[in-house]
Length: 504
Image 1 (tube, helix red, strand yellow):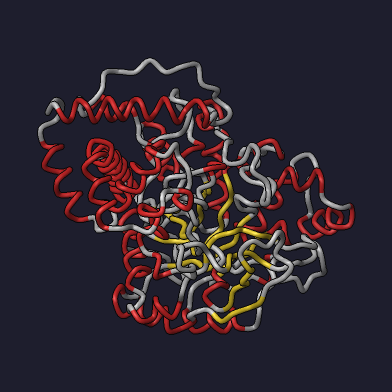
Image 2 (spheres, rainbow, N blue to C red):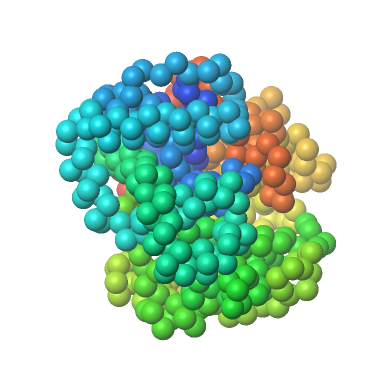
């Protein structure tokens, strides 16, 4: 695992696989993903950053998944299933090209995977798949609980496990044994779908490695309350005797939100995690680095301190700060897994504990250029203030696109940006990219939307909302436009970020 090395100057692009083009309604792990790797390799862009690739639930957010270990089976490529002899070439409905219609895609993809499993059960297709499947099953300690969780959830109309009958919610052994017998077909079908996801992801990951492209994955700090993780490991979370959260996660009021942000995720029982040697977290990180070369840790500050809100509260106003596991956690991880190439998402209002923890563990933090113009030249988000050990972004999945920001920012911020970046207002995004790539930061990253000069209509997520997020897709024409690779080649060459460049 190469990871990120101090002294190397490199660059990357944020593009979630769901946003890749293709005929099946959602980006997948097939030809378009391999072609995207080829584009990055040909332009000397050494990093591909994704969002979490877990199975999404209500709202389709990759940060609210049914499991911290499982994969998103909506990303399975139909054409690769055809190659394996598991399905016939499918006739896709008339899906839109510019966005993911999850309501149409999810049932269509589920039916396709059901057909693949049925053919597999009849031992049609590539005969080596059965051997690979059995090996996969034996190597994934999380798989059986997840498969049973999803089968029971489906049998209860997709409802949260918190609303299941008590005997299933509380995991009474007799009830679980009965469910395993009654739902055995659905359970094994879920296992098989997970096998297909990881088989295809491994193929893509190996291909990226062969082309000199590293994948940056994403580790959300919290897990969803409606997840196999909480259902199967209730002792690791702050729950009451009926397995309901006593406190939930969020952030307190600030300049941007007078009532804070109420995320609702259950909090970890860090004392219990410490008693286990942080075994669950170590397995989670071990799993992450089987599918990624580098990982960004979302809301890193929660390892230093975190905001605790009483369960049932309507806002995040009434809460308290509690100490996170701190350096003890990272020492335990290092003892088991060595020095991991992690990126700390250290954005937002931070207590003094956070930079102290970062100094101790040595992970690079993040800088976001569109955050830089609210104060003055001392702002830490301005490129001349970046440390070398930083990962610099024009923006992230939670921000407006740079062109969208430019069109809507307050006049004072626009004037500051225009002056500082010496912008050509006919193409203001170019000035942002130049400044970022020219900076001292070891890594410069832009969302694909910025490289394509797209406005707010291409924004991936608006925090605090649930409508129309996570839907944006690039079209085939946008990816194949010769101006995209030419732009990346030019930026990487001019600013010494072509993959493999070294600063002495």
